[in-house]
Image 1 (tube, protein in one colour):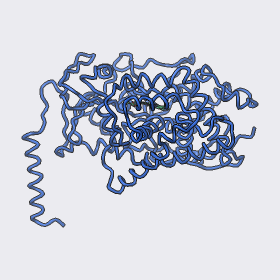
Image 2 (cartoon, protein in one colour):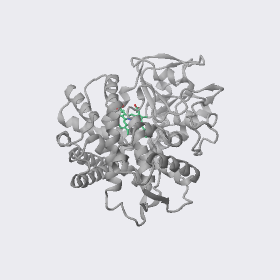
Image 3 (cartoon, helix red, strand yellow):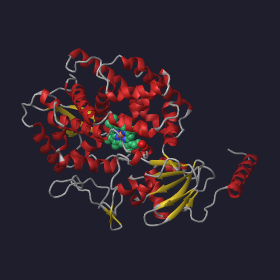
Image 4 (spheres, helix red, strand yellow):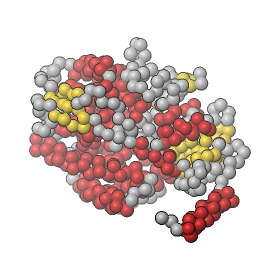
Length: 505
Ligand code: HEM
């Protein structure tokens, strides 16, 4: 119970805060976007924004339109939700709208990574090359061998009897383990050496188990809201992962990707010491592995809930893998041309990502500036604020662009002649950005092609070699873990139980 004096003090404090906010607080100036500070001084809308950004921002859009500024934990964030206007932000020079400052803040908060100054454009260009062309085909081959090891060489999985598992756990662990081995290398050079395979399975499982624990705390770490106890656990998991990913250990691994060696050399060139290099390796494990597993989960879940979509995709898998007598060598040698020639799967993937990918695209406003939108509206932005696009709310879930946007329709991105549908409209005008799971501009995913190949290989192997079904066919679509809005792929609130067994060959 608060005493009378205590109550009076509390009241005085609140009144003083309100007076301070009125005296020194921020007010909307002419030409600025609508300002919504919320009722709590300084904190503003931080709680609602952090709890469920999609609902909060959709409500704000109804109230203020497609551009507005909110206050959250002392920061003023302008939100732009008109996809016709995204290009204006994406291509504005870094001297005005900087994408790197906030990324560096998060790198430090989440992974203790502090790097010297470098040109992020140059870094991305260099790393993008390591994930494309010849390097991409090496990665695809390595991913195929590693997926095979995790899924089809593991005696605990290859049973002719039904086995139960959580679908999210199955997909996330399979993709993270195979993805980690593909980029960070194997115990031995020979993919088909049985003892090397067993070591790879054990090592990648250890990495996944630790990473999964870390992943549960990462969103709170990003928002600096870990309790003291959680912070202790978080730091201890990171220490364990740093041991597993130490650059000394990684240097001894075989089949390391060109991406890994180039990134390590880039850190050496920047003069980064070994301890910080190791911390950066964990940051990169998150950047490269946190999205594809959840994508495979949602995609398989939607297929399991939509039999016509499943039948269409299975038909494509049949044409890719052809006869059942296909050798393992033929599976691992699958060409890029074959992988690309899957229009139905491509539409299913686009639709899955439209529904479940929710990254923010953020910029720090480095100088007072005028934002001119293509429809000639002009808005003043203030130095020190943040500007944020949230493509999940618009275009991805916009009912003006997509009929029944909350529904999975597997052929939404397919024309009648089986080519990819790319014409979507808002306000009568064709959209350049109609879905943005991979980000855009400088924020575009540099691993997109590798990610798409990896997702396809995983789904195709699962569907080709396993019978897979929902334990409870009437299972509803799980809700999202809402604190993940803004950080890429969403995860389900609860896992879904599936049964699987090796197909009778
Ligand atoms: C469904 C799977 C994936 C999705 C939806 C996705 C999405 C994204 C997005 C939206 C960004 C931009 C982040 C930003 O700059 O704000 C990004 C960056 C990136 N992605 Fe992906 N990604 C996926 C899988 C992968 C995979 C498998 C790799 C593996 C190579 C990868 C590598 C990267 C890297 C290296 C970056 C740059 C991070 C940085 O700026 O430092 N991604 N991804």
